[in-house]
Length: 78
Image 1 (cartoon, rainbow, N blue to C red):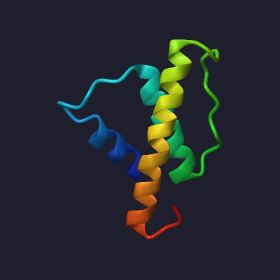
Image 2: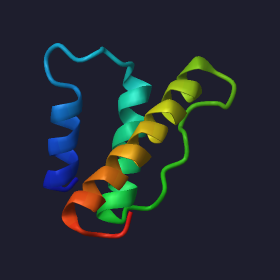
Image 3: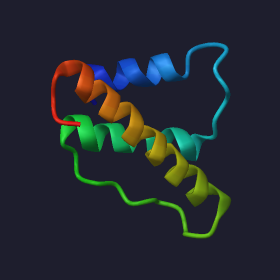
Image 4: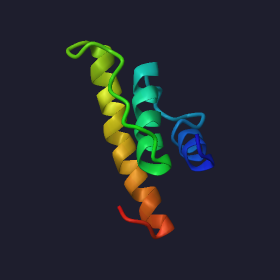
């Protein structure tokens, strides 16, 4: 993972932040790595229709927003 991904994760889940599940963290990190580091898209490791898959997809949704913000601040394509 790039320093940008690690920085965003640390900032997002700093002490006092709203706790999120492990699948949420995984989805967020996977999307950041995909958008910022060019890693292959990571499909959910959880069966669709489970709470874990829902959390993973929600994390990916936030990852898209945070990656777009990061790219915009770097002057890259959002």
